[in-house]
Length: 237
Image (cartoon, rainbow, N blue to C red; front, side, top):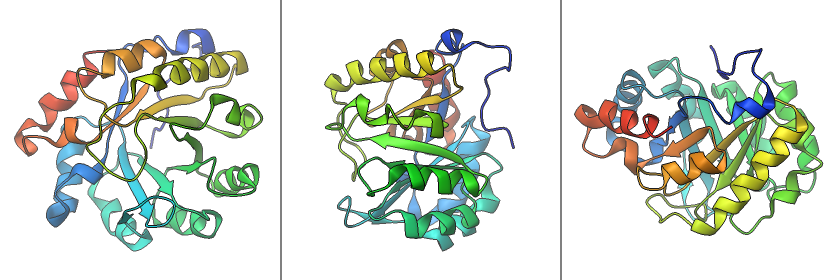
């Protein structure tokens, strides 16, 4: 299973010039009554990853998708499962989501006292490790974590609900994180989640993101429209 698509010869400075952004549709916007079929449909439609939002009803208001559900869904797509844990405390659940079939596990910088140790745990389980930044969390939060991450997620809405409006003020943070990644010389994806659609995606890409999470923009119109929805976002890159 190929997670990261950058050629080995590509330099960090060229990384933000990837021709097409990766699209990770958020199944939070799928039809939950037919979730397996929805994942299969979005896979065939051209999704690069499958974004799974996990909420605990504590760190964020809503409650979604425990490990048994992830495990049950795993057989419906061979694409990487991009699992975003909005859980506090997060450490007790990391192994369960890894065992359930997560390929990338992203945690919040605010969701534990020892986030460096949490990232080490994810990587020790053979998974790609991501760190997420809430809108009010500064980019400098990851300065001493960047050697432990494979992905940095900038939230452009406050986490907990789908369908929110994009927070324009986060574009400067995306650009700041891109500079940090390029300076590190490491292969790290820069992902953006929240209010991403055909209007906001060009700004996100220009700021330096190479992975876009999109829920409503991917799943609107039903399965017959999924391929066109994803293509519309990819062709903005």
